[in-house]
Image (cartoon, rainbow, N blue to C red; front, side):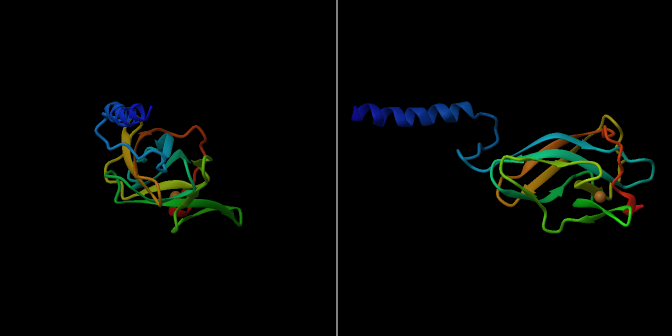
Length: 161
Ligand SMILES: [Cu+2]
């Protein structure tokens, strides 16, 4: 019985390695992760170099979206939107956006969102945008966002105009 145990443990480890052949190092079992769904960036109208990006983030443990970068923009900021004297205002979340364990957190039009600044090449519907998300705890996640108008038309960049 003891001998069986000694043999089967390394065998199981080998099987796990064989199953993870994607090139990326697999996260350690139980390591915190963040999954991203429905990533979308708004097209840039002619001449505009700012636009909003939206997605849904789910962290396996309590975490925080700390920063975002993209080859398509000089900067990407994490913004919050709020109503102030009947005006939709937005400002940068300098400490990032908290993510509660297991809870889907939306970046959405008219609410918290990502804002790309310094977009040199116009973003046209059908394009894709690469966004690299960095978290306080989980490994960074690279996201491919499609460029399209969000279903909800609410605009969140009044303050930037
Ligand atoms: Cu914004």
